[in-house]
Image (cartoon, rainbow over all chains, first blue to last red; front, side, top):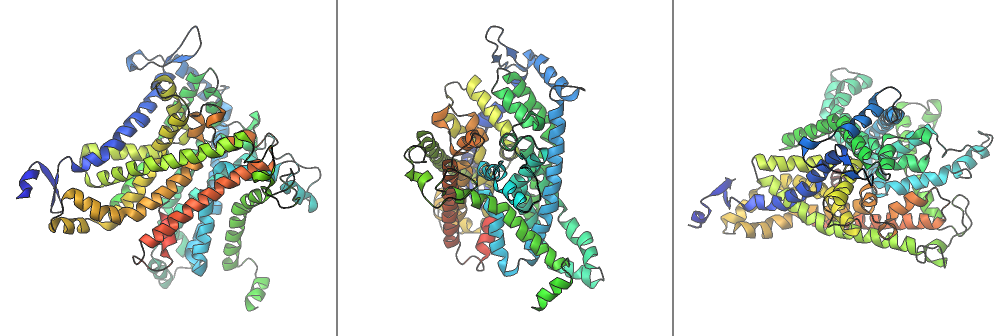
Length: 310
Length: 292
């Protein structure tokens, strides 16, 4: 009887709802994202392809894409990709730093995740708290901790001198690439370990037992069963770690602040707070284009994972 | 003893190397922060040699302690204000979004789902610059400062509750609601009396995570700030870490760590008591961890 009321309605799982019922829940957040995510995104493009006020020198966004002017963006592209460009060293350096940091994250993270998921035993919960703790400590606080340790009279230099491993104190915070790379590793490795732990923990033990029963050595079991089963998590973890590293400028600023270690993020940050905001927008557009593939991969893999779960 | 001898004979045997490596990793990842917190209690000005325990940098020092230095006090207040407001707005928005996305089918629904996921993976620097530009060039009614910071943070944090609540919705299924409606409840009543109580654990976890995450936020909050009065703790750290800071900076950072730990502990305890009886003992933390 009351079903009449819901004539124009959707039927899910044998229950009748008015048609507007579920969309109404999603509408506020969707509108929010349209105005504060999609529109700002477009704002980057209209500033990057916009004009510069001839009198004040400040950027004037052009909202109509047919009137876009690509002079400023071409400048950014040339400085990025042409030999000897202004931005090129920073771009190459960023790829080297992020690549090395990613490799270290994997080499350190995999064994740790493997051990805790496989052999954690009754310590598992405790070890897990240790893995999660860095998530709840501000990134800047964790970098501050290293600034304290690495300053000229800091504990690192003191310890090294106490052990007679080093002569005069080393200036770790003055443009050392290695400091920046290790800082990035320290900052982002928890984001690598947790997905790895999740995947390794879900592996069905009977598969490993089957491999052993069929005569595979522990090494072979690892390379033929465990590693392939964790491949998805390795890729996902790598993407999760890589995306923020490309946009990172504060690690470099806190642990080095030298032109010798400038990264792309620093270029954006410096351009953003200078009169050349147009260039900042152009650099962000280039960064976005470069990161589109890993982002799309991540979206694709999470979509597949949720389909499998459903 | 036998183990020890075995280790002496073959110190690089596989089962020993892995735990040692794991412990070294955990020490490396936690000791620097513990030391930084420890030095916030130093009674001298040094951040590398211990001169005795005191609360000087928290409230003792009349000029440069967190309590008495106006810039540090403002940063603390602004951080807490932004985190609390973000939590209160982002979580309800996100929870409703998750329920809507879970039930609403069709092209519009998948577009809006894609938007949410896309916002989740966009690097924060890109989002920060885009929000800065839009508030400066288009939505000029909103001035940079607390309002802009709040709007930006909510946009950035909204995806967390959505992802957490959707996972819970998947595991609950539709049966309880259907039973309620078969017994005569209206859709709204079924939602209010059945679904929301079942979602409460996920909602509490979302509150805790969003609070903890937004109190630590740096890029967006910095780009949308308007000078010293709207600086937060991470911004203070960024500007003073290399400029000969006193342990007061460590004290400020430690307060942030303590408040995050408190938020997470409350979230964890509430999650545990709300899901009591749903699973084996000790599994709560692992489940909690899986929701990050």
